[in-house]
Length: 86
Image (cartoon, one colour):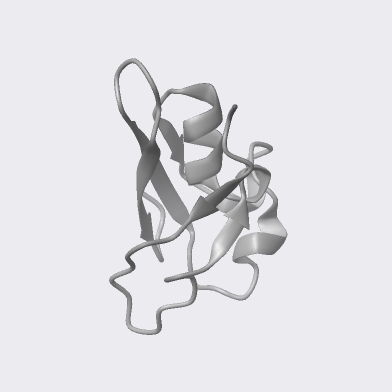
């Protein structure tokens, strides 16, 4: 059975917003990477259809990348975000 949520276990940010929280797989880029078992890169969050932009609306995040963890079975994802386009 696939996970229905992501659990943010670490966050290195000036103002951590998600550490310790659980988010629906469908609302985050990390969730998308887990479900699709592939790397996801977004240059501009406002224009990418893979995630719900409301998740990031109150943040300074502009660009993101998420990499799934695990070869046979995806057990999580590592995400990195930037406040400028990358």
